[in-house]
Image (cartoon, rainbow over all chains, first blue to last red; front, top):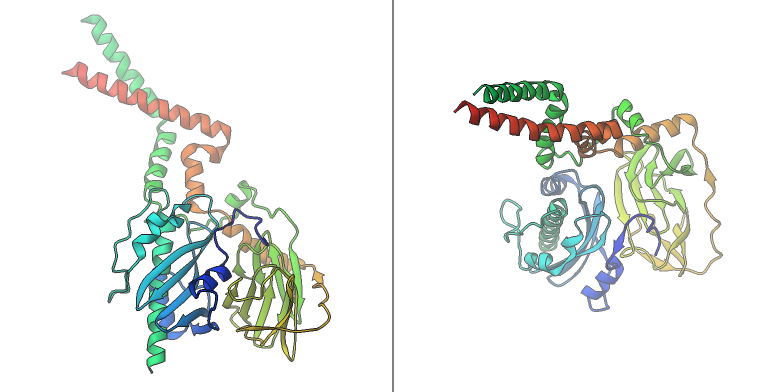
Length: 161
Length: 245
């Protein structure tokens, strides 16, 4: 695998994740610009400026898939998130780069996100329990889930216009 | 009675002495301990130390020579895995550069596993492309011309429009390897200052002060003494209170 000089733990390649989500027939990727008001809201969710000006997504019907990154303690966590009908259907850690806190990849943690939606304050509607020793990774995953839900909502609103 | 009084006197005496002799390390350990307990609240993990003296103390120097590619008047460099374009930090964990293209309003940098699309004026990252967005295989080389951006990977040759939305396979000769360059002194210093500032978090420094490691092995010894001193202070303090009753 390329560029694994660090302690990258690749649990699933992002390309494989997208392929799996859409049963081997992923749609063509679309782009969502992260500019203007959307950028402000994304910054509120992330607690910092978004790192890029656009994000890619894959969508069929009411089901969208996102590959997003957020810094845990000091290194980015790459997560794959599936949103269906405005709720989290699946969330996975695809690549974990920190030396500690990798418990967030386990299903006992990620299952908590299933069914979570976004409330008026752009917070998750489900309570996500933390993991001792993985606080920052848990926080990163929460932010990514909220961000994917927000982006999914934005895509839907764009389609309805 | 006399013996008991002299013991009490001795206890007071040592309680005072220990408190005075070791008050500085005890105070340092206490303050850093409280701060570390609330490191999340103060965001110490993401706050980076930029003071040259402290960075010098830690010996923050890159382990390898920077990899440099140039495109027109622009330069991209990977310094111990940190990607900089025209001196601005773009991304981390980019140990290798395979191509750098100037497309007028956008710049494209490729490593062996990712491509970075950057807005030239602002040097803001437009998008970081990973395996979900790129052709399969490791990127060997990339270049650009009027037809778009060309990428050679271990699985074949591909082309995309300059916005890198999607790739199509193409038949052509393999691209030459990217030509490496070197940084001039001004360029090197500009990235070095930033690189050093990204390497040391406040949490790390506080923890090192708290454990004494910041001051080397003598610091560790003194903090151990401070720990023992606190036990003795607690012991003599309790004894003094008990004896006064």
